[in-house]
Length: 370
View (tube, rainbow, N blue to C red):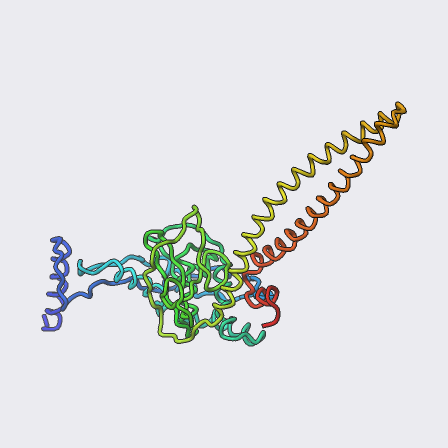
């Protein structure tokens, strides 16, 4: 037995001893603090081609035809996706950050990211998108993928989420973070432990979400960059401070938070105004219905008086009837004006919530040319 093989054997035997004996001590010379999953491509695997994927962005339709290496995809599916902890003093934040970084940036996915961003780059060139629009393009793509609620204990690699065309919050967030990091953006994952939720943060010029310096990007549904999640599935509202997990070494930032915040403020103001108008309209409608019923009753009484030749009472009631008709018409006119205002605001509200894939167009619709 050579000296080299003897050393390898001793290390192997010691590792077996530590694992089998339940020893929790940490020996720096032999083990890292923790080891993370890696994709090992499964040779010889084949998969049927996936159909093109289309989604709306701004005022055009984007179609992606990029497929994935079936061997890498199969390797990602079969990967352990857990953390082996050798140093029990390692904190939850440290190993969790290590896990998500490893899965997002696994080098076996480099070709996948190259191919996919190659298609995005073509879209960027075709429509002359600036850096902020290019980021939004990738964000809308990931947001448009189907959301399937799973759990944070079984995350997918980005290559899986892309080919499966679905994922939960951490799956979709890792895919978007990987894309943005690959394209040079300063991006992080935002993990919310108490709510078991994950989102993406991109560096911005403002203070950012909870003063992190990152603009919040919700990936479970199409929404504007820089706007918080609001109410999540199950009526969960995020209230905790996020664990910020930097992904990659990019430096590009997002510069349109002032616009998305203005859009969001306008949406909030419209929503509040619509509630006030709706309450007012309900009250006016009830009053109009009551007054209309009274007028119909008076109209029948006038017909009877006229038929009976009771002209004296008829003339007395006609004067009151005409006064009430004028009041009713005035109230109806006021109701119609408020109803028109409600319809105008509802149209603006519906436009905003149906165009969250188009920050540029929505801002122009609300506030005019930029």
